[in-house]
Length: 409
Image (cartoon, rainbow, N blue to C red; front, side, top):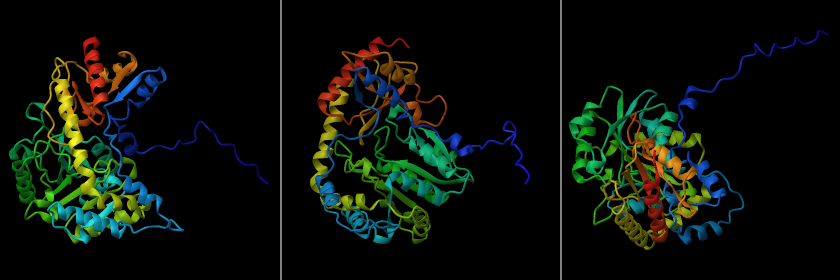
């Protein structure tokens, strides 16, 4: 019997990771978490203004419904989601004035999966989607997964991050453009698109045959008597509108991972369900909880909206007392992007966690450059999520003012 030849380890090929993996970015919202954890180990209290994790209680009906779930086998569910949840979503949209049917709704594993499925349904690898920056940072990661190129069009803090003109939007359209992506109310800016802006988007998408992907996760969170205008209300391009939604913010249930994708075209929805079938089904138990939450929507949501509007007003009253901070009062959601009197907000956000505290307290912020894909944008801006109670916001503002006074970067 011949002995096996020894392998020359120095010549053995090494496995390589994909280019997609290398291109996948770390989350700019979460990348400072290790620094915050270290600060806490040093006995410093950290006020988290960096992430949209509401502290408002999830509806008790969700937990009650989950606790009463008594199936003997937790089996696979329908790929498009539980029928009762789809019915609840249809009822919710109809009460909001949108005429949709059961066949127009598929349930997804969170809003993120809805976005990913939309990208992959309307684009081939290398195709383009126009997006207005600053934008929800996870769009970049999801586009990388789908091998889609996001084409940014920059909005500015000076006009509250509202859209540029129709001409400027059309200048970004190429033969590879397949869709326009919007988020209203917006994360990270809090901007709510006006009726005029929605009409501009309608004209662009109709004229050029583009899909309009509308992320409407924060639909309820609009203030000062404003009304969120859903893309589903736009005429004549109904088959081109794909709405992306989630219960995460609506019911303060970020960990449930239940979202949905909505479109009125049977052809589009038949393509989307293929991706749904490939991942088998969304989580059953969380869907059971979501059904109960939607049944109690009206009772739950009104005081929640009032609380966030109060927090926004309190935050901006405090910000006006801090010299050099500039930003517009957000019209919706629970975020705002602010310009700081610093050259590099990224360094500032690191510094407040590693080298600063005020009476053993500090703040965790999100550098806004991570919400842009154009280079060198947002370098002196931060995103704040006002998801803390009034007392915590008051303390966080005191710490922020002290930090800006001490920072030498």
